[in-house]
Length: 434
View 1 (spheres, rainbow, N blue to C red):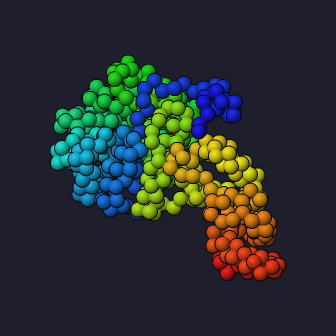
View 2: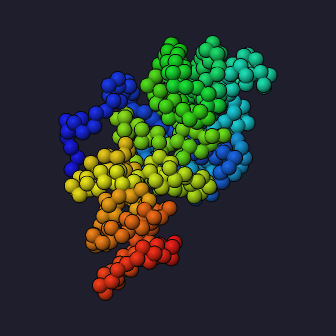
View 3: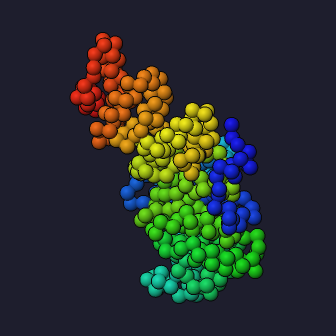
């Protein structure tokens, strides 16, 4: 049974609450970019349409608010996939806003208009345009060109009945006056949202707060109803921190990709963002489908999950260390699931549909062995515990269930016959099982 709030405070002193971050003024919306920016990673495989559809269902189950379904302007196959996915959203009445990214040219936006008509739902056009001085220099663009592109592209989309989020690429290295002028033109042309992009993963949280605060004030002067999105990358490993900082500063919709796949080092990881939002009390989504969501992306996109990856890695909720295992096992003996999954972990395993496991290895203690035997329905015989622990200490790896069961058989046979068990026999059993 979970303790009441006062009991929790007695058990966990939360330094996060000493100088608490400001809570979002309204519900934070989430955009899933896995099927667009995620698929721009050079190392991944593009999933088949049926796999994308299944992933869309998992997004729905996770409470995702919008999903970029792909670049319609990249070719007929991409446009077809976007149309199929958008139609699935319509047919299944999914509360997901379909999106499609586009350069600020009619040739990219027109296919989104077609897909919207074919699917029977307005697909939000995510129209992007580079705005930083370095990008302007590389492209040979003047400010007048940016303003013209912004106005014409947004006007074209709005004229054809589709909503527009106007995206400035490399926002985090753009000049304030440039951003103000470009966004002003886009909003007056009909964009209902703007998107601030850390395209190259350059910014730090303090810069994120300064930028979003500046743009929130700028946008409010034009139209307070216009929303602000945040799109971040993890080149410096600051992706989650920047996304949270953006929310604190006034962004009301943020982007992420499953497993953080995407350009270069990737995007803000969706699963980690969702967990952090729940733990901060900024959201209360059902996250039990996170393991399946990440498994599908891993298998269908060829994105390997490291064993030590947070939340969904193989080791995220398991231990083979004696001290850790002892505390968890004692809580388990008390039949206190709340305590067991928090005493040595900052993320409750049950929140994401997983559970803690205790293994037996070279750094194990008696509690590891007893817990393992109990969970696998094996007698906690004192000799079993002693001999298995000793064998684990001599090994250079974890013992598998087969290893343990083989040793138990050897021990049972010898003890039943009144004989002794040599260490070499148990070591041989481990090697044979492996």
